[in-house]
Image 1 (cartoon, rainbow, N blue to C red):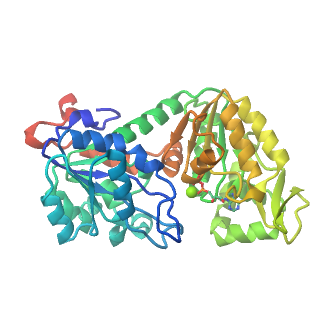
Image 2: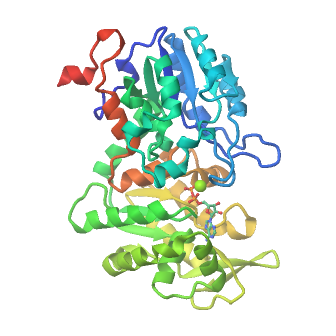
Image 3: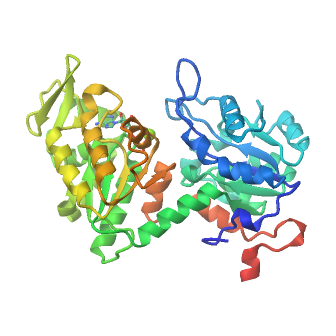
Amino acid sequence: MKFGINTLDDLEVKDKTVLCRIDINEPVDRNTGTLRDTTRIEACIPTLRELADKGARLVLLAHQGSDIEYKNFYTTEPHAAVLSALLGREVRFIDDVCGPAAREAIRALRGGEILLLDNVRFVAEEQTLFETKLLLSHEEQAKTLLVRKLAPLADLYVNDAFAAAHRDQPSLCGFERLLPSAMGRLFEEEFGVISGLMENPGRPCVFVLGGAKINDAFLMMRTVLKRGTAGVRGGSADLVLTGGLVGEVLLWAEDADIGEGARAFIEKEGYASLLGAAKELLAQYRDRILLPEDFAAVREGRREEYPLGRIPKSALVLDIGTKTAARYEERIRSAGTVFVNGPMGVFEEEATERGTRMVWDALGDTPAYTVIGGGDSIAAARKYGKTGAIDYICTGGGALIRFLTGEELPVVKALRFGSRLPLPGGRPGSHARAC
Ligand code: ADP
Ligand code: MG
């Protein structure tokens, strides 16, 4: 038991049916349907190996998004082949989530066998509408089809999906109401490292925030900046370096001219609604937020840089400029701790990668303890050969950021509940013993 949650050490899994939620959501090649990366699949292997070696009848639940968030979902079939290869034992796949075929396959499992179900997001209640608009409570999530159909077949639930720990969905938070639960090894490690680091980070503690999914970044900025002001040392930011859309929204909020193209893009993405929050942040913490002073755009296929205030009307800025990146490099090299989420620009394209490359190079060199989270941020670290030099690579960008906002993560809350349920065989959960 750690953090009020069972670990795998608390479970006896031999011949028990264990539902294990993992996060193996990977970038998918739009044309071939193959996986472009396997980092997350690799990360959950220790948990799966341990459970299978101990003789569990292992049922894997996972989601796979797509290249277009929430607009299409891919099957998890290609993941079964990767899992099989990495584990060196067969991981069966069934193209069903919780229908009769899936249930029959679960019943037929023997100790040590592993079955991967199809994408849980094929089931409507798992999807974002239920999470964001209807706000199903964990009790309500326990009554959704997925949980109703699968929980009765299982003895235990294990969640190893730290990367999805900020999501409030039935496959993540519903089973814990009904089944004695534990976190997997990856969850235990990621949660442990981040909790420890936030309690006592080396100073100065610098946050580098960029990217294109920025709602949580704004929430988090408010929390970590406020803590610093309130004299709370744990989890507080001494400095925030901004790039990507985070920097652009903050500059717009300051009435700086980031160009028509960038403003239109921010509006299209629905982030103009953050301008109010951005103004508040600037009013209170301007001295601890660094904003870009120059930008890059692409003209006739080539990189062109402009100081702020001289961005041409027709230009769409897609990267921070070299001056800004150099200033950020210095701050990173003299930091004690650096948290990073979101690239500085569209690093996937040669003309707009320099800002991210320079900042990521500094992450590789700095003596500071460096933590990086987010699928694209990690992809950038890989691209620039920095994965070995960064101290901690967190598979969950969204979860990391949400954790830093100070909220209890939905999956952590659910797992704490499920850790209090009696374990099979009448043995009480270790938490119950401790009480
Ligand atoms: P992460 O996956 O690391 O959490 P995000 O998903 O938030 O990061 O953002 C990554 C994406 O943001 C990348 O695909 C990158 O091309 C894009 N991006 C970065 N800067 C900009 C920008 N200024 N304008 C548009 N897109 C950007
Ligand atoms: Mg991303």
